[in-house]
Image (tube, rainbow, N blue to C red):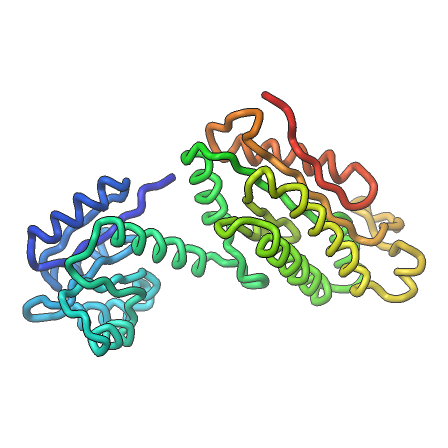
Length: 310
């Protein structure tokens, strides 16, 4: 995983160095700046992923720096956490009012600082690359989540979710209705993960009709079973009465020939590290692709769990 770069701006050098030590110990790359002018120069030259910005600085304070950054269209999306010895509600409102993403009062505990930094980085990344149709996190967040599970050496289960015969449906009913199917699938996955999964489970949208969920192995059977049951029930609403009665639609296949395509189903390939260890995300994705391919060869909606040891 690429190291996130953080610009730390504080006119008190010992404070900036203290923050630098805390962040670097957690694996972040830190660029210090000791006044507003230096901060505005480095925000252009260093392209930080996050800015920790002290409010009380001479000549130009943190509010003014934050405002200047937010006025620049190129820099506007960089998240900013304000740092200050002030703790009043008025100061916090002013900081948030000029575009800060969070607000930490000094002195702070290292664990609190790291937790806030991680939260803001994750939230911002997901917001920037969220799928516009479902608002779910996209590929960068998905990769980070898988790598985090691998590096944490905890048991995990990655669910690769794909719709069967979606292209034929799109060709028959149009992209607008196809988009509604994608949105409904997202709702089904999110609802079942919230109700049956863990509080820190993850749902992402790879693109098109491909979704991903990360949970723990003991949750796989109930989550997959309920997703399939919900999907098989809800998908019928998107077909005409005639097509529902026939159980198929007629559409062109990939060779341009008219063919019969069954009512859409859902396939889930489940990759776990219960019986084997994964070294990187590519191995997880490769196994997921194999499982989905096998699952899609079976009739109806299915979930397939990898139980191999190597």
